[in-house]
Structures are given as structure tokens and as C-alpha cells.
Length: 152
Length: 288
Image 1 (cartoon, rainbow over the protein chains, first blue to last red):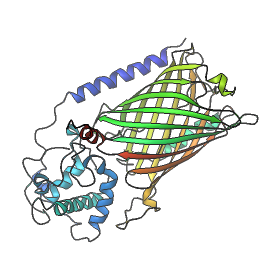
Image 2 (image 1 turned 120 degrees about the vertical axis):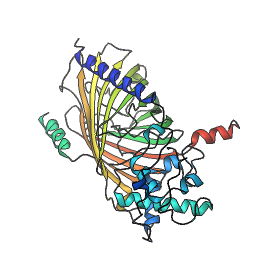
Image 3 (image 1 turned 60 degrees about the vertical axis):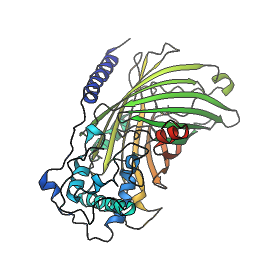
Image 4 (image 1 turned 120 degrees about the horizontal axis):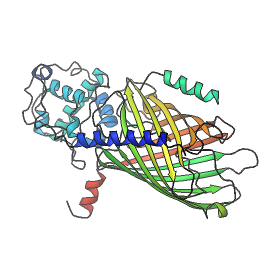
């Protein structure tokens, strides 16, 4: 019996298992903040009347699995996107977080989405605030990134 | 057999692949796991149109896929089979787990897949093709007498590049009930959404809700006889239609590429996702 293919398979699995153990042993970062220049970016889609509707579709396709339809994340344990901590962040900061993710805390990077789509998602996130009546006033553009913001 | 390698080569030339969402494959697995605490319910069927003299069959199977945490998804399969002019029977169950060791997105994302199968020889769902082509066409009453306890492992490699997903699965399976050695198989696939533009208006049957792709899968023999002789291979276009943001309808007609394959396998499936299933269950039982 030729065991060579099996040995290679077992070796590959063992190597990847070690990588997984190393990865899960890494603690999540305490703070997850957008750099100042990223947080200061203006939302080019903020005045597009269709942006929130497009952003909602993209949110329902890519974000809803964790953050839920109303953005609360109450059943999944993901970040509450309606919370004042999230809504107080600038559009630029939210765009940076959507783009870069925080994989140690379970938030993937969505950099593979086109840039306009990511801004549309950020525009939609503002409507979650409006629906809840919580969070900061206005579009959030140019506001300071919250130091309390965390991943997910 | 040359045609298979030519097809695989052409598949590799396709520009690599898609983003964040589940790909529409029936056989191939990609690297996106179920979100933690969510449960996905799926009903699928594999309809076999065998060669002359053999009876057509329908093999339905249910899948319950649960996101244990962000790097571990577990899945239970319950399967049955109905053969034309014969009987309908339960053919067994499978329990699998997928582990994603690297949470971040890389050019190639590895996932480890481990499965235990407790099925009988009447099983026809063909979730993976391994070893030699060896579907028995004796009556179901005889096939159901032979049980197989099998362990299966897969190395899943998957990439999202631009708007495409491309995935490769390398399969090794061991039947604990027989001395068949270790059997090998493969599955390759690629897919993408039909359009990347998103309309601000609600729509159901529109291109943005459709994902199309191609799967190629087959057996590679075993440690007793490694190679392509007497193996089954299939090429299968796949199409998935997102009915709502929670439910998807999928369809795939697979064409047999060798004389040891079924000429045609028709696969169809419906999936529905229950978000926050874990916390809903806790609340139901009053523990949270």
C-alpha cells in the first residue's frame, strides 16, 4: 500500500492545525481605532439620494449575518451599530473599519467590495441611528473617532 | 481522460474570484463559514439519470449547518433515496466540522474539513466523489444491508479576488468497514455574481440576485490503485438565486465526463438561514 499521499495530507493538516491554534491564542486588540487621516475622510456618497438604499442591499447581503437586520447584533453578539459609540464615529472612521476589519474580534475586512459600495454601506448605517433615535446628530462626517470603539 | 485535464487547466485560467457571501456550490466547499450562533437549514436533492439498463433515482438530503464560533462550523446531514421501480429508504447520516485556522482574508484561505459518515450502500447523494466509480445498482433491499462507517478529511483552499470566488478541495476518505485503503478525490469550482451593480430599488428576479459558476469534481482512486482509471468525473454549471436575504434556491446539472460517471446528475437545493439561533434558543429556554 502506498502511504505517501496520505503522509503528505496528514502533514498538511497538522501544519494548518498548528497555525489555527497559534491564531486563536492571540488576544483581540483592546482598541480598534481608525487613523486620524482615515477618520477625517468625507463620504462622497452622503448626498447621493440612492446611496442608503444601495447600502441597505449590500448590508443585507454581507453584514446582516452578524449585525442583524436592525443593526443591533443582540442575538448574535456582534457590535450594536445603533449604539452611540458606533454612531458617534465619523463616516471616514466607519469606512476604514468596514474596509480593514478587525479579524481578531471577528469582524472581516470588506476591502473586496468596491469603494463606492463601502461608502453606501456607511450611508445606510446612519439610517440605523435615525430609526433608533440614538447616536450623534448629523451625518457624522468629520467627527472624532470614538476611543471606546471595539471590534466586531 | 485527457479532456478532464484540459477542462481543469481552462478552469485555472479563469480569473480568480468573489466576496464575503456563500458561493453556490453543491460539492465544493469554500472558506466562508456560517456566522457564529446562526443556523442554516438546507433541503437538497441529487437526481441521477444512469446509463441504459439502470434505474433513475432521487436522493434527498437535509443539512443543518451551525456556526459554533468564528473558526468552527458544524453540519449534520440526514439522507434518503428513492429508486424508480424499487423502494424509498433512509440511507444514513453524516456529521462534519469545518475549521478555519486563519481568520483574516489571505490570497488563499485554508479550511480543514473532517467528517464521519454512517451510511449504507444505497446512499446516492454524492456529496463528494472519491476512489473508483462504484455505485451499486442492486435492489435497495440488498444495498441497505451493507453499512459503511467512513472518515473523511478535506483540505479546502479558497480565494476571493475581485468579484470571483475560486475554491479547491482535496479529499481523502477511509471506509472503516472495508479494506479499501484510503480513497482520494478532488473538487474545484469558481463563481461570481452576474452583476456587481446594485439597484436602489427592490427586485427579485434580477441579475444582482443571481450567482453563477462552474464545479468540476471526481475521484482519484485509492492507495491500492491511485489514478484516473475507472473513476467518475463531472463538470457542473451552478446557479443560485437569492429569493430573500435569508433564503436561496440553487440548481446544478452535472454532466458525466467519463464512461464510469452517471451521464447526468441534477442537483437542486433550497436554504434558509435562522440568524441568532443560539440566543433565540437560550431565550426560549429562559437561560439568557
